Length: 411
Image 1 (cartoon, rainbow, N blue to C red):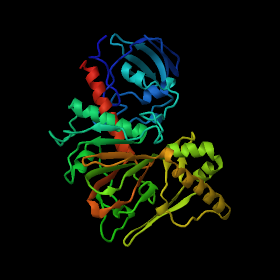
Image 2 (tube, rainbow, N blue to C red):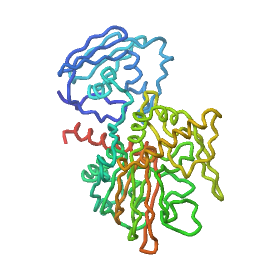
Image 3 (cartoon, rainbow, N blue to C red):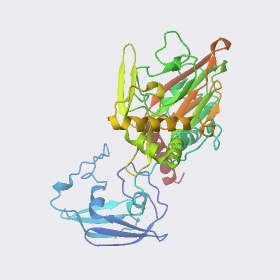
């Protein structure tokens, strides 16, 4: 069969047909579709009607829904259905008496009847310890910026590298790009290829180096314990980028740990402490000369399935605990259990920044730290920025969409 005359889809037509429909059956409220590989999919009539792609359902310019189901005059039901000669599903809906076509590749990709976890992540999450992963996943990004400052969507080499980088961040929490230029501002050019940066009181781009009159421990040469950045915000940044422009000091080794792996170990080895840290809200405070950020949240946050979604660990950014009286001692007992676990060598991944390295990591999952360094022995200059998790998920979906479009064209 040919895809040339297949109907549009609600989300930009990037759905090559890898398996064709074989036959259908239906009643008023349910349509069953059997595919040529034997898979059976079921679709409710109301779901099909709301997700059609015609101009009574979506705005053809924006692809955003304009349909109001309650205005149809009754529950959308299936009056008739068939497969046409192009392999598209054709459904006539009552009470409208409207006939609509559905793209088989799109139907297969959005087969909710065969999905065990509709909210599964784009990339499976893999927790790790320093014993399992001694250094970040590293990719050679030399020449990435040499030819253009655009997104270079039609550059297969760029797309492949970016896909690998984004999947590493989503799956493992971090990635290291190597051999990038070391000019100030390079980071902005790279970040903008992924999505918009997040501005904070530290600026859109910030320089991490020892300086006089610092407003953060990061701007000194002292050691930094494991932490996430900006837990003092209602919505702490999802991603952090750190680009090494220069590093010639003695010491200052970077240390990373998977906060999800630590939290899972705490859940297994100290379940009461884990439960307490998911329940008690701690005070996170950053009180500076011109700003005063304060937020209250648990150190470990779970979704409704009990899966880890966030850690807020940063001892030097905690204010006084303002919890119910009876929670104070259990909370500190749980905190000390966690602090002891953070010291265990099994979790730590240690590496030295090399000029031209860029590390991108999930700031709501990964904990980062730094050894003290001797400033008189050289210079250590990292440039950083923040971004939201949404941006890399969006960017990865766009890369996949471009891939699907090429496959659909037979490229």
